[in-house]
Length: 119
Image 1 (cartoon, helix red, strand yellow):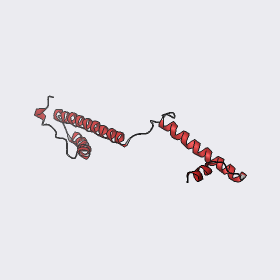
Image 2: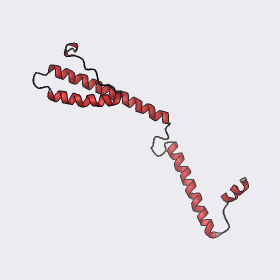
Image 3: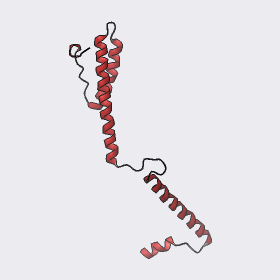
Image 4: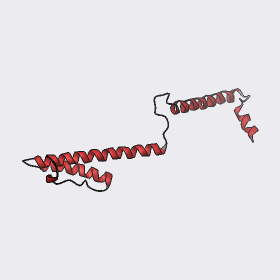
């Protein structure tokens, strides 16, 4: 079996098949070189990633987004408590951020009462 495989790697005697064999060999070599170049970050790509790395990065991004949303919601609550006039614009903005927060965490952000905030 291995001899038949090795025979297929050797160039054929027929000139038409020899050209075809050379093209196939050239494409295989190009594919191997491209694969090695991507894997070793020669072309400027980041190389190959493990699935666990991609998953961990996604979790880190989600955590950063949750913290950012919590900070934004808290700041909006402070603005709402300080506002003298209409608070409807602040509340509608808060509602948008609350929905985003709920999508990520499964629950709404617990907004503090105005007297709990140091304004």
